Length: 224
Image 1 (cartoon, rainbow, N blue to C red):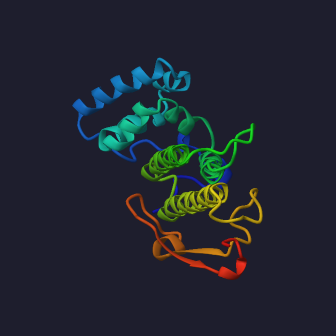
Image 2 (cartoon, rainbow, N blue to C red):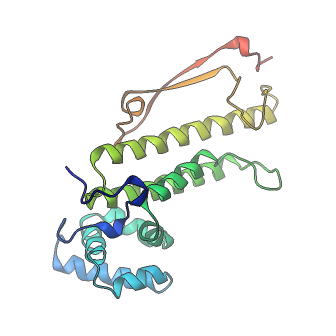
Image 3 (cartoon, helix red, strand yellow):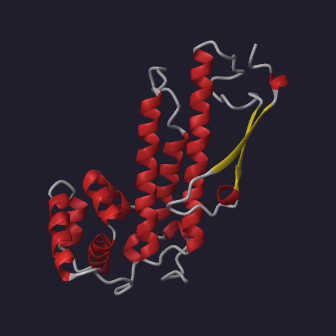
């Protein structure tokens, strides 16, 4: 499958989608989706502007939502998500979401570390947003399969690394171990986590789980 244009990675945007790449499931579903998009547009000017235009992107978004309840429900649950998807270059946005996931364990400006529940929420939000935008780029043939699996794998990498850093910091704070650095918890910890299978090959799909193998080197001396 080829991309729809020869734009560089930095220039890829959903607005580059070509007419007719997909078709609506049914006209009844299409009318329902357009009503949903109008509701979102009340609070999202970028979506309202899109609906008032004749750009191919408007038809594409509506058609995609008729084919995927997941995409439609995601846009409704997070009204700013569609604006995020259509307003910036795709790869720039996905890079920022991967960074959000990787930094989800870090303390706030006041030095307070997030709870486990807060880290989980941040990771789920970043994952949902990245999956939503990647899926649209995939359906629009702006992404090839390799692009999609790489971004999904990058998100899994970042999420796994963030979860590990959070757990190391939590264990340090509870006195179970002593880290060498709170700024970079995993460095020098003796903990080694390897992504196996599709994660290791950067071939994760939307429904893939991840396989990881964990090693610990006691001589790192973080455990008394």
